[in-house]
Image 1 (tube, rainbow, N blue to C red):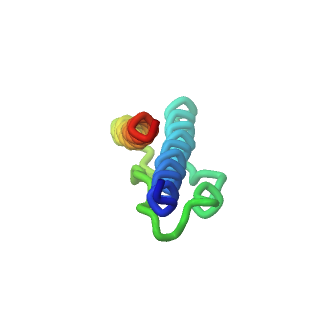
Image 2 (image 1 turned 135 degrees about the horizontal axis):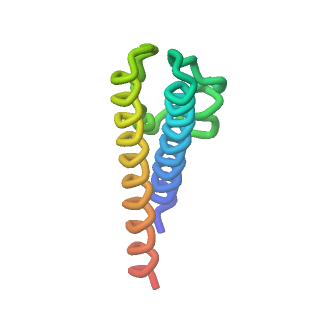
Length: 108
């Protein structure tokens, strides 16, 4: 097995899981903002903390841009956009896992 390929798979999984984590944090913030009826506050954790361990050479995780708007309709749009970012990262994770399973099957 080519170790560079394996490292690339690990880097990809790390990146996609970081994207899922980042989107889940954003979903929490947006949902809390909607429930409280106020404008969106910045996340308590920094992006740098969320992405620890992700190699700088890897593709950054899918992230939704959220506007700090007090408008409820914009907050719902932000919620749906963030949900799509989570799903995109989850699909990337699934694809990488399936590919690694196929590789392991081929090597047996």
